[in-house]
Image (cartoon, rainbow, N blue to C red):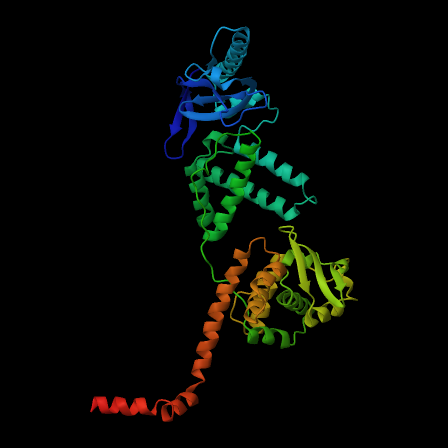
Amino acid sequence: MLYLKVFNLEHGFWTCSKKVVFMKSNFKAAFYLRSNHVNKDGKSMVMLRCSLNGERANFGSTGIGVDPKAWNSSKSRVKGRTTEALSTNLQLSNLEDLVLSIYNKYENTDELSLDRIKQDFLGKTVSTDTIMELFETHNEDVKKQVGYGLSTTSYQKYELVRKRFAEMIMKKYRRKDLRLTEVTPFVIHDFELYLRTEIGQSANTATKTLKTFKSVILFGLRNGLTTNNPFANIRFHLKAVDRGYLEDDELNRLMNKEIENKRLSLIRDLFVFSCFTGLAYIDLANLKGENIVTLNGVEWIKGRRIKTGTLINVVLLDIPKRLILKYTDDKRRKEFLFPIISNQKMNAYLKEIAAICNIDKNLTCHIARHTFATMALSKGVPIESVSKMLGHTNIRTTQIYAKVTDKKIEHDMEGLAGQMGKFNKSAENGLFEDNLESDKAAKA
């Protein structure tokens, strides 16, 4: 039976109807020298490059070294009729025959792709013909690293992206999977649109999701599992956002509020602890007694951030010290310093607390971290110190809070200007009296 293979121009991949005819493909294999490197014997490695219908892929080194002066680049062979030249050319011809035989094997099948040819040529045993297979290979690799530099959260992040992409291709294309060569820039565009419209992600969240997806593709490229990079010409830009934080009076209001409900009281205490230490939720949730270290009579929080692995170095101030003591005998806390609930539930309870304390802001765990950074900078702590306390890998991240602090100073000065009325009046009667007389004379 003949089958008709139809190319979807909109999305850039093949779909099948009941009758399909395979079209003749244009395949080429070519050898070239790695001219930028010569070994100690004065030889350069011969590399293999293949092309299929205009798409090209490097298959890597052939393992054959030749004298660059003896190489005929137009014929992709060694010049001359010496025994060495004939032997080398025979090896190259055998490799060319091998790669052509692999092409012929798949020529009239829907498995034909440079990825498939390269895998067979290199003897790859891992089957990653499709994007879902690549996700599976990548995510299993991440899973094995959990506890050895990566966290469970990292694994869950990649699994969520896989799930979202699977949902999108099923809803948009009625497909359970796509071949790696079918994942085009337009498919990435459709995925971004799906994240924004169907899932409801913000522009920045959608961008971060796509960055996570890109890292899966890069994993495939690095390990020779794919030659297709749909992100090659895509540039990501995060929009500047106003990072919320609590003003001093709002933080005081939160701390002074009497909360009888034990659950909400705990959430408030955890939030305040983070406001005075800058710890992210996941680091606070994993804080243990061993993380409290005394150096020269000063207590510190020492450890590593779970998200990035960078060091945590924060002096333990009086308020967080007292909060630790408050929960020392709490039976709910297990091996950690505090009883901990999930990030999602904590954020939900913080909405209740904001309402109780008349704080008209969207309180989340991360707002506490922002509050710490803003408070520290506005009270004169150098930005380099704040960056180290927050465990930022790049000081540019901390500079975002410095911009917020400038706005805060501007806002505070506007408030101060409103209270300067009596000084303005005194200035008019004394400092600027001569100017006022001059103005009156000029108008007359």
